[in-house]
Structure formats: structure tokens, C-alpha cells
Image 1 (cartoon, rainbow, N blue to C red):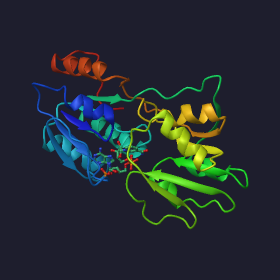
Image 2 (image 1 turned 180 degrees about the vertical axis):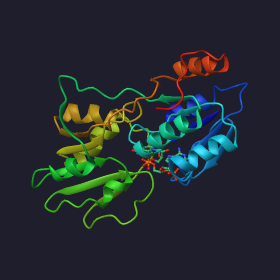
Image 3 (image 1 turned 180 degrees about the horizontal axis):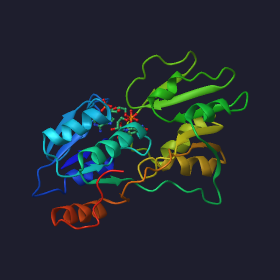
Image 4 (image 1 turned 120 degrees about the horizontal axis):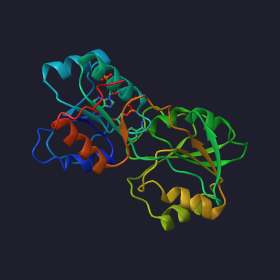
Length: 245
Ligand code: NAP
């Protein structure tokens, strides 16, 4: 089984795949990746064509795409490659966050749009990935949090290096200390990044929330347990198993 990883779900699944030969693939973008069960390979495949070749060459029996909800390119490649190589594919993707009554969210399609919509004089806390550091917003203060230093940050972007998880109390203190008025984040879902949203709601901050890319027409589940059931179906040759998009 080939597991496309880079998320907490992928890591959790990898540790529960006893009795099968598991290879997890990581993009290789972080210098200290988390530990996975089974074997791990690093780096790209060379697009959908390269991935399809890889699936055939290594006689991969099934692929689970458990990459991040915003890693749209590798998910598209997986769908095309699995369809081309006739390999069963499952998308494991956690549910998005949903705004509650206390939340003040405005939705955007891209991180750039979310940043460019900040009002003049805003102080924004940007938790939207390292690449967001390249987006300049003159007249606004941007504090960008990342695990590793971004390459080529735009002038004036303040970088805060920190590794999750973060508690609600710590997020609230940080936002208050820095005079944050807006939070910019992607709708990643999950529990580990949720404290910043709770803190924003508690302080009445406006959240510029970046929507997920549109879903691909592939079989999808939201939990590791459901992914394990699908793997059992694959092993048993169940007829409901779909090969790619
Ligand atoms: P992306 O834009 O969808 O993919 C860009 C390229 O990176 C792909 O075309 C592929 O190269 C390679 N790639 C991505 N994931 C890979 C994997 N698991 N194994 C092998 N190659 C992979 O991806 P991204 O948004 O840069 O994210 C990169 C990785 O970080 C993903 O694995 C994702 O799960 C993780 N991550 C992403 C985010 C996010 O917000 N985007 C957040 C947390 C974690 P080739 O075309 O050469 O195969």
C-alpha cells in the first residue's frame, strides 16, 4: 500500500497498518518529518505520469491519499495516476471547520485574497503556511507563524517560528500581546490547529478563512477507522472499490 502523507491522519494510519506492506511518501519539504510506521520515501514522483509509472513498477495494490486538504496538486496527480494505472484510490481527508455563532469569519478562495482584503492599519496573524510570507501588504502588519523559516519573505513580514500544538490560553495571550486584529488561516480542520480559532472568537477578532479547493470525484472518508475498513475491502476484493477518478 502506498500512503501519501504529511498529515496527522496519515501518521496515525501508518501505525495501524499491521500485517501489510506499507510505504509512506512524503514531499520532503520539512527537515524533521514525524515518525511513521512502515517504510518512508521522500520527494516527488514527477507528476501524475511519474506516479503512475511508480505504481506499476512497484506493483502498488492500493493508494491512500491522506495529504493535507490544501495539497491540491498531489491529490490531483494521485487521482489521475490511479485511474491510469488501474489502482484503487481512497482519499482520507478530515472535515473542515464550521463557523459557530461567536465566530466572525469572512471566506476567501486564496491566501493572497485573504491578505489583500485586510483593512489599512490591521495587525494580522497569518497561520497559512510558509509560502504566505511572500505576500506583501503595505500599510498592514503581518505576523506569520511557521515551523521552519520561510524562504524569501516579503519586506515587513514578521516571522514567528513555533511548532504546534498551541493551547487556547497561549494563542489568546499571543494575540493580545501583539495587538492582533485579524487572523488569516486555511480551513484545514482537525483539532491541533483549532485553538487559534477559539482564541480569535474569544477576543472578537475577524478571521479571514481560506476555503478548501474543490473536492475531486474520488472515494473519500474522514477517519482512520474508515480508511482501515476500505483497506480490508481492497484486500477482500470488494466490488465497491473505485480505481482513481
Ligand atoms: P502540492 O502543492 O499538492 O504538491 C506539490 C508537489 O509536491 C506534487 O506535485 C508532488 O511532486 C510533491 N508532493 C506533495 N506531496 C507529496 C507526497 N506526500 N509524496 C510525494 N510527493 C509529494 O503539495 P503542498 O501543498 O506543497 O504540500 C506538500 C506536502 O506537505 C503534502 O504532502 C502535504 O500533505 C503536506 N502539508 C501541506 C500543507 C498545505 O497547507 N498545503 C499543510 C500541512 C502539510 P511531483 O509532482 O513531483 O510528484
